[in-house]
Amino acid sequence: MGALLFGVSNTLFNVNEVSLRQQVTPDRLLGRVGTSMQCIGVGILTLGALLGCCGFFLAVLWTWFSPVRKLRQAPPMYSLFLH
Image (tube, rainbow, N blue to C red; front, side):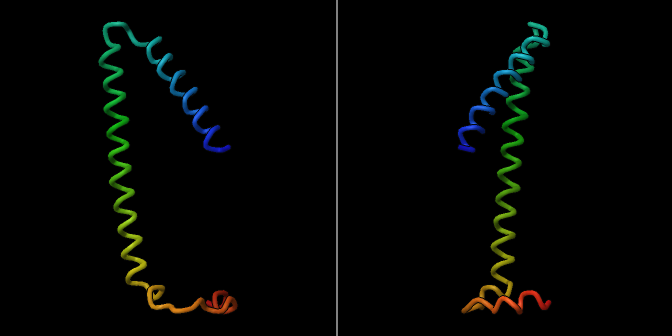
């Protein structure tokens, strides 16, 4: 249900955002403004993917060098609250 609402609201936002941008932009600049917005959007997606990849590898390294890797059974619950 959440994904459906997100998809519908995202579509409505995009339609309204592009319509407003086209309304306030002079005709001679419409192509440049549209292209600039697409380049910014793709650039942000690329940056987000790079940061996400770095975060994933940091999490893998953190798990690899932590004591979690050597655990063979879960510690008792009360020992988690004593530290």
